[in-house]
Image 1 (tube, helix red, strand yellow):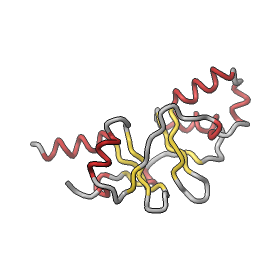
Image 2: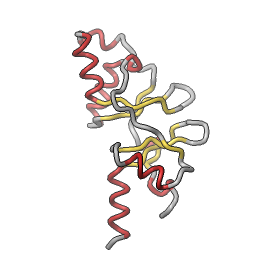
Image 3: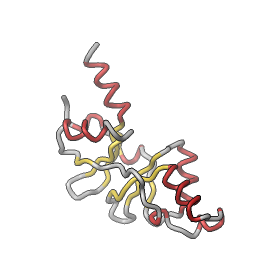
Length: 134
């Protein structure tokens, strides 16, 4: 199997949030891109922090009875992810990636300093496996 680079969708081609964004901005970006889960990066450093899902946001708003106007004032980082996406170094083996991709739709990929460089999707892995088994 090739290096993880060959499966990578680069950061420039992936929608993501920054930790300074509001809940409302997150919802609007997720809606626009039709993402159900989206990575959150540290503004400035670009380090991967976590990923947040539509469900995480929904349960947070419901359980705290947050009004829509309040979503503009609260940072997305106040929401804890129920099932955070674990990241993987681009230098890891395919076996490490495989164990993560079984339970996540995508794996955030970071460099040796934890800086987000892109994602590898389960779909991309399956497409590549399909090619090799034809």
